[in-house]
Length: 186
Image (tube, rainbow, N blue to C red; front, side, top):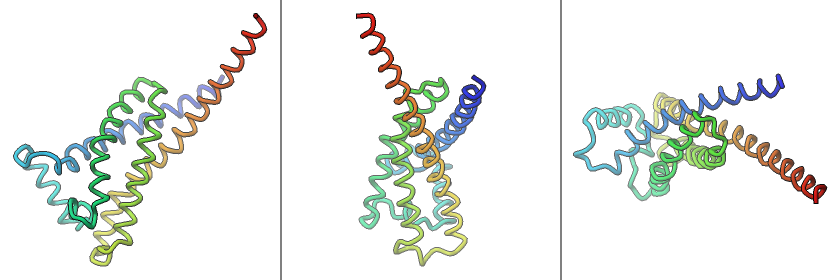
């Protein structure tokens, strides 16, 4: 029982870390990345300035070229972020706060998408055609911004996949026990 309690406590600490991460990611998605989809008149000046400052400091080849043909795939990544990931953040935050394991498979899907798309972005920044134009400071700044958004989903992917696998194994054992019990009573 002590091991079970220790595992539950560890899992809950990870859940709160995931909640905080998804909250930050949701804000960044809606307030910065989402600017592409909002009418310009609806975007507060402070958010426009924040994005301009980011682009000036980073020379981000992905965000700076969003909407151009050479990064068409990135456009779809942002569309998926706004239409799939943002709802997953909200459901994930609510589910994890309530300690509802039914949200785990959704978060496996989210973390798989987030990790792989961010990994593609990192590779594009490091090895893409615009990489030579980035200074070492800009590259460091970009990696400091992108790498955490790859590592946290990777951590979630591994953790929540293990949780789902264990939960399914438990359910399978429970079902087998129930079936055996029903056979004995009939």
